[in-house]
Image 1: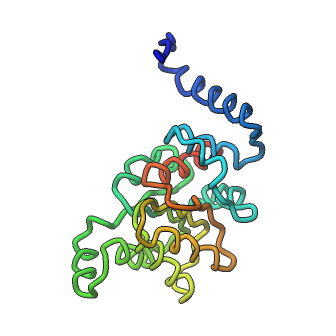
Image 2 (image 1 turned 135 degrees about the vertical axis):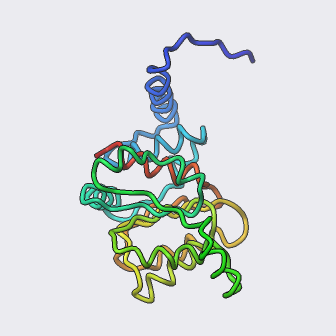
Length: 211
């Protein structure tokens, strides 16, 4: 079936997209409310996948706590350069926050080789050295999420939020389930295999745009 082309100005494209998302959700009997709604809708907008209306899991007051952390200048640590690139750093900097990704750092690569682990896992250990309030956005590597959970349990780091949305088939679901066992750590999780660096970045942006 040929789709009719709409004449929409660049400024109206995103607005129209979110209107379509809201309409199609309502047709499915789903009405999103509260401060979680913009996060869910932006994930759908980024992926064109309406499954995110059902598979995103929020801990109690996760968004509220994340917004408070960002207002207080919390920084974001990601596990990929793609997620790093996708986060609105200019908007975040207005509140004193920065975005970090250590995956390409030489010392992280050397540590991974020396300890026979992945750079993603080693990058989480480097994040522990930051003397800042942190939000972690993991969209690609289950090994990063697993090591982060271990570091939290060891008391070496206490994130203000964990965005756990790695994508794939190996250790993806089990790494997300590890986050559920953590006490007193707010989280946003994409249940199942779906996720990705683009989803990690868009969740960060959905939070930042609510400030």
